[in-house]
Length: 227
Image (cartoon, rainbow, N blue to C red; front, side, top):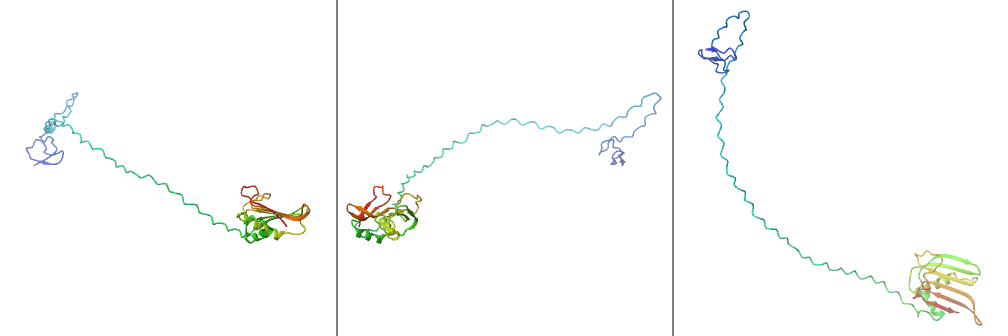
C-alpha cells in the first residue's frame, strides 16, 4: 500500500493517481541542479481529469396551445320588484272638546238689579293685583282670575265690588285681567264701573256700567243698570 503525500489516503502500489484527490503518485526524478545563469524551470501543475458533464436532455417539442373556451354567459339575475301599497294618511285625532260652561242661574244679560245680584253665586276665585286710590274720591281695583264666560266675569266683578266698596268713594272701578296678563292699564277679563250719586234728569241714582272681555270684541256684552 502506498500513502498519498498530499491527502494522506492509502492507494495501491501501482496506482498512478490518488483515488481521492487525483494527484500524480508516480515517483518523481529530481531535476539536475541548475547551472549558473540558467533559468530554473517552473514546476508544472498536475493535470486533473475533468469531470464529464451528463448529456443534456433534448428539449421537448412544443405542445400545441389549445385556445381556452370562454365560459358560458351567465343569465342576468332578475330583480324581484315588490309593490308597496301607498301609505294611508293617518287621520289626526279629534280635538278634545272643552267641557261645557255652566249655565247662568238667571237670564243673561240681566235686566234688573235683582238678576244682577243673583249672578254672584257663579263668581270665580280671584287674586288682588293692584288697589289704587286716585284724586276725586276714585278707587281702582285690579283683580286676576282664569278666563271664563261673560256671565261668570260679571259675577266675579260684582263679588269684588261688594268686597272693596266704600261710601267715601264716588267712583269705584273693578278691572279684571287674565292670570298671564302683565299690562297694568288694559283690562281683558271684564270691567265694572260704579258711579255714586249720578244725576239722571231729576233723579240722583247709583249707576253700574259692566263690560265683558276687553269691551271691544264682537262678543263683548255691555250692561247698564241703575238703582
